[in-house]
Image (tube, rainbow, N blue to C red):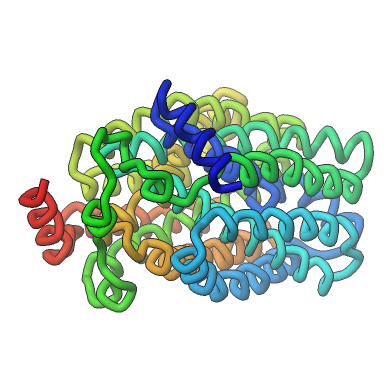
Length: 430
């Protein structure tokens, strides 16, 4: 099997760098993570609330508990990725994600709903995104921003397609059958490329990152460098990154989760319009993701992160102004630009600041923090809906967080000195 795969890799690599095949696989993984993403749940939230007789706060609490449990398991996934490689972890993740969809479709009470959320968030939003970005990260260095940006197009397609498709499935087959179809589709989309095409890193098939034409030797393989998890946790930049991206993860998740509800209940737009607005978001992502990838490879990363946080703050303000179709479309486009930044940066920042030698462990811990943010994000919005009858003021106040984080990144976020030393030593060897 390994010899056959090496032959396939070499045949493709004679025409173009095989890493771009890995980008496609990563993109399919990010698309399939839609089964565990908030924009998909957004389409199901009104009918689940009505059919199971559960309040927005109760559903958000189930979502929070499940996502928190899933978050604290992600460092284990990161360590497994470092030990066994992302490919085998991806295969098991996809299998279990499919079963998670089937289980969620059978939920009939609060406990089953919470367990279903746990499966979907851990294997979809957590493990699948972590492993997909990890395998792409391993194949690129100087072009990593572009590669991860192109991979992020899978998320754009998921955001544009999963909500309206889910709405169609709900209207024609019911929400339970809809989840069965989503689960089966993840197996169909992901299993063949993972089994026959995925390769953990270029060195495994005698290639180099970015398609650099160089003979691969043990010395080349030893040039993979980076901080350990313990070393990364001693660096100031780890905590600045965690604090900043916690805000994006928390607040973007909340908007995804309640977009349809907010636009329907407070601005009079129908469910169909609320889910359809994910389409201009998708189109904006498709346009801006390659641009973000390019600028990540050319400009200082802390400046790009600072801009991304300002766009997040703008998205929060704009959804509170969606009083007409025009304003709603403007919001959805800016939200798409926001997601273009965030999806590109989530996979990029860990290898950028800490190297790729132990990036699975570091990303697993970092992603745990971000998923914790995602878990609690909907709670303030849900409480504002249930207890105050209006989430608008809460949303506007929450925009202060990413604005402050933007200033923090602009002035204080810098690369660890040890990483600069690694790069200097590598350049001398080259």
